[in-house]
Length: 243
Image (cartoon, rainbow, N blue to C red; front, side, top):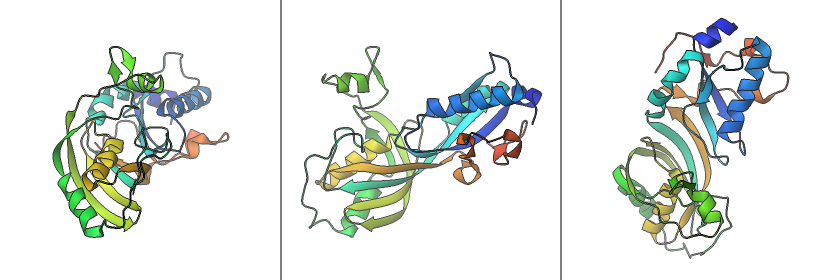
């Protein structure tokens, strides 16, 4: 890999760790690339689809001329391995906020859970979480929510392509979900809980696929201080378009 190849266009598949923002991961990559290849100050780099800090998994980073591919990749369907906890809720729909509104789940059966999951396959109306980066009157919804302001989120159409590989160990339910661009898995977890009438929230989320790009080809080694790009084999070579 050379500086010229990077500027011509390159795609890296990263396995983002827990508690890192997508912005931090891209900045880490940018710092290492510029340091190792002596790249110009205006070297272009960006990610194709944000992952929440509490989520792990596939983060696609495009650099050089391949940054033009970002919108195309963002539009691709996504796949996530998901774990939810039923019988309790949180204001953030994930682990950011403490548990509230505990409910008895002794009457909830595995068959009920599977039937409810099946109901969500197809096009659905979904309200994004209040604790999200969506802007309302120019302000991030999560900033308004954390300031204690009332926030009304508008529902939007999204598509759940499939829900498979379901594993139930009450109160935890895990499954793999395929979905269209713009789907909030936190909202899906919350809505599943509402349909079950016992509440639920997202406990774990791992993105495993974006379009044809998979987590199996991703690396988390870029976080290591002694990491060198010449050892990286899990990236898409310049000029090789697999999507």
